[in-house]
Amino acid sequence: MQALYDRFRDLLHEAARFAVVGLAGLAVTDSGANLLQYGAGMDRFSATALATIAATALSFAASRYWTFRHRQHTGAGRETVLFFAVNGIGVAITEGCVELAAAFGRTSKFWYNIALLGGIGLATMFRYWSYKRWIWPSAATASSQVTRRAPRRPARERLTRLPVRELARFGAVGALTFLAARGAAFVLHVGAGAGPLPSAVVAFAAVGGISYAGNRCWTFRHRQRAGIRRESVRYAALYSAGLAVQLGWVGLTAYVPGRHGGLSIEAALITGTALGAAFRFWSYREWVWPARPILS
Image 1: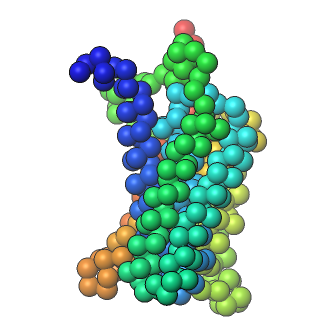
Image 2: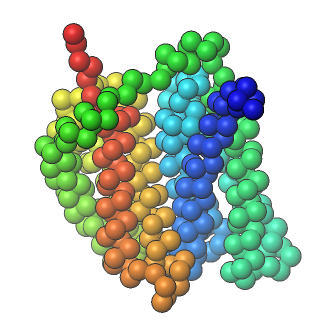
């Protein structure tokens, strides 16, 4: 039994990590689609597409830096293009299932979610196969797989060295970004007549450049640099993933449970913003601007 486990250990661990990422993407997609359709009044196809795109950003960051981190990496640019192309096909699969249900007259909320979940399941199987075959193929040798694993700091060191100054700077940049986003959302909502939720999402995406510049040139200026192009790609993916975390949390806690079983929209927005900020801070330090190596 142990020999059988040792033989398939890597595959089991990889599949388990993929399942965790898939469940997170499922939560963001399902709750986001319900939030956009039944909370913001979007049509079902637009709601499905936007929610899936938000979940894709979260899935890319988790897949590249966790699920398939031991496999070959051919550059963030190439992997990003392939990843979003594959997930574009996944979106088409999901949309096709939703449209097929509508074609048979199944347009209620119940059948919409059944078709949505079925489409997500089919798209997930396609993604797993294509990730392993085209985006992150097996490494040429076992030794090359080991060398690609980033060294981890001792747990005691990670717990005792709290980044208080970085947290304060990150909070200041976040507050500035939030104020800019709120102003942009107000202009979009009041001036352009867009809905409150689409206005907020577009505004927070638009002010991402302010957040990137502030964190690169001030919050994490003492950390490693990997080049603006590489950093900006990772930052954009993780920033979008933070938005997906916020959107998924609001959908799960305020809309999906119903009017009497969930949080108020204000409480959901506050806690969702906090969760998104915590995810961004941790991921920026781990993957965008890691600590400089200690020279002996």
